[in-house]
Image (tube, rainbow, N blue to C red):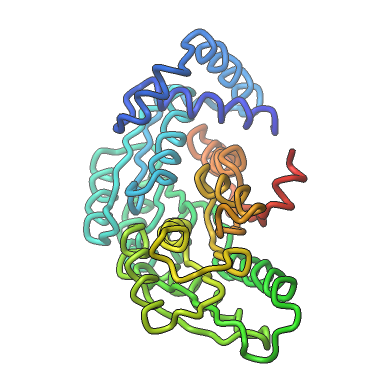
Amino acid sequence: MKKIFSIILVIAVSFAMLTGCSTQKAEESATNNGDSAAVTEAADQITEAVTDATEGSAEGKSVGITMPSVGNDFMLALSQALQGTLEAQGCKVQVDSAENDVTTQLTQIENYTTMGVDVIVVWAVNGDGVASACKSAMDAGIPVLAFAYEIPGATTSVISATEESMAAQCVTMTSEWIDKTFADAGDGEVNVLVITSSTVPESVTRSEGLKKIADNKKVNLITAEVEDQDNTDAARTLIENTMLSTPDIDVVVAVNGTCAVGVESYISSSSSPIQDKSKFGIFCIDETEEIVAKIKASETNESVLRGTISMGTFDDTIGDFMTGITPLITGQTPIERVNGKAFVITPETLAERE
């Protein structure tokens, strides 16, 4: 199956780019890199592989996917990959962005139910908030797949890596860097800013987990909540304002990658009060090409974004997704839970990949 998922990834990205990406960047990528013959060949391979692996057929099945937002590059690319993968198997797919609004997402789920789609995929803005609509869909005979976040008691299947586990890994990664970089620091001598968010309940859980960096005795914990966790400018403004009153911050732990990139843009700018970049570190949860590039550059202190926790590569994510949704679109026995993966990404682990 691992080979299947690798083929899926190729198809997902290529298909999404070739069939109507909504950004100029994606259109340019399709123009420069698109190879319709290769995509067709890969599509034939994945269709054959999935047919061999399942008893049912996905051909003609309809899927509604509601995302909390596609407001950053990662979420946009992932939504396109999910759509492209399913369409490559013959499914009809509608993807909607809830713009981080529970009421909007409720309406989208209700619309899918009225349309009579075969499967509904929900990346919830608020699991409790959309539970009633998901339950109604299930009562109507439509299976609901919860993606990334759980929806208590109102889904057929769940795919997620827990917020607690990802936060714990981020804390461990950050703490190890602190101990190595500030080996001679005494208790409370390393100022660590944790950028939190309460946009959705899962962000609150993740934020609380990240605060456990204070368990490291060297850490003096500072916290600040970002106004919009999906806006790099909001994070940049937050760090800039915070450092006006607390210029001696040594480490930032950000609730997500978008915030980390915003912070990094300020710390790397001429306006930054940080003189010795080798003694400053940013850590987060999320993986994008931009974040990985910055982590690689941190080896020479050209960047100060030094590590992240990834919920897996696109290959892993699409693989988890297909593991959960394939039984639902082919009429097989649902898999109750697929445990999503989480990986530490630092310059050292990137070197091991290569």
